[in-house]
Length: 91
Image 1 (cartoon, one colour):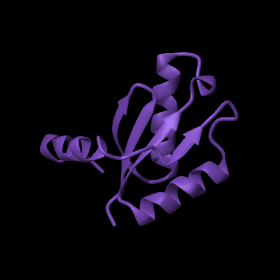
Image 2 (spheres, one colour):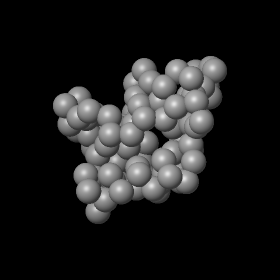
Image 3 (cartoon, helix red, strand yellow):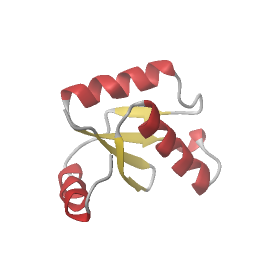
């Protein structure tokens, strides 16, 4: 799902006050991580996921992980800021 610039800006401002609900470590993405993300997305439309430094080696790899999470959880990637990913899914 594509977000307009206005929608993306609004979601980014809302995400500033949210704490990460899922952390991804050196074992990477697995089925349980995705289930947990989906569960949180059903409860709250907007969530943050923290990617620990042990989960990636390069900046590109971090963005690939973020895009993969969004695809597998059927969410929209709002932002990757530092090691934090903001995901959004309409109800």
